[in-house]
Image (cartoon, rainbow, N blue to C red; front, side, top):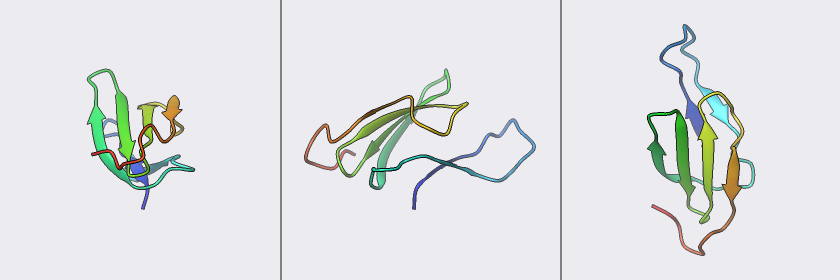
Length: 69
């Protein structure tokens, strides 16, 4: 359960958990060339993460009453 990241350019092979407090299961992901991760959740929320942080840059909570896919 949760959302994890793994930086292939670092020596560590341990995945780092991203903070998804207050959100449900991730249902869709999109990664940009600039290192931003857009994550949609089954609760209808959307987050944007930066590759250098474990907390989201911004969260739009419950944008829809339906799961996002």
